[in-house]
Length: 416
Ligand code: GAL
Image (cartoon, rainbow, N blue to C red):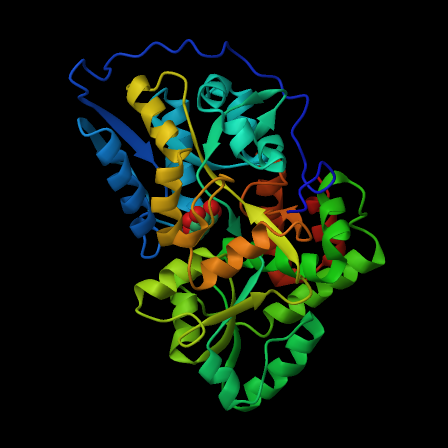
């Protein structure tokens, strides 16, 4: 895969308050192996809870005496969970482990001293040799590592219902302008061109439009500072994003990402842009890949893997620290990843996982992810390329942007 320092932003220069590896814990795993671990995530909805359940089942197999306390808070992309988590961390009430993403998203928690450096687990489990180098770089803050990756998801995907496209004589668009031409045809036939959900899904669409229009280098430069947000290509891409959004049900969409995909399944919408957790969700509906649903790279982003990686942390002061370490070891293990990812719609972060376990869409995904000619870029919406502050500024500006369509104002807010 085409990971490189240039394609990923690596956090540097963060001030880490507090000392690593010395949290005081009360309750531990007993000599008989008994104990408890409270794990906080947002994998509570259909298509996500199945993956978590598979990982927990493998965790229980390895740690039969440890009770798993599932503290999942529903809501796509963790939008609800993050608020709940922030309050718990501020109140010095951390879970034993919480879900995060590889990348700059953890900057705040690291700077606030909420997390332990888990490099000792990386040494003990020899994870550095077993994970892609670029992923380890994305996980590193000022030489330290604060979470353990369980998977690799791809964000830049366009989902569709093959029967619907066939009925209208269409094949998936390879550029966003081609999408707009198709949208006119689809509208004429009473089909919604693109279904969408809440603000985070609009941000997800935005990153895919920017990637498709600016290419991997131009997109990556938006986060490194090499691409000027005020430049004509970025301004044009932002204008195009609004035009794409005009072809969606943004004004009336009420549900999360799953109901948006339901419209594609029902054939009332032609396309949906979403990460590959959609594959897991669509399978829970009994649909078969290539028959009930299909997918291509989002327009203009073929051969590019806009990646994100779910990872789990060790909060300072975790009440059940030893059990939390066992959980992290599970997340980073081959058996854990090969139990979790086929259910979750993601590919393993580990390089030595069993590829035979990945079928359907996932066989295609793992082939692309491990292809050295694939270019890897990091997701905005899912934590890789923007820190907490910048990402929140983009969220606020985006809500305004979809109303006022002021590309200059949005660019000023997004440029960080
Ligand atoms: C992402 C997360 C995925 C999936 C998705 C939708 O942020 O990394 O694993 O859960 O949100 O909720």
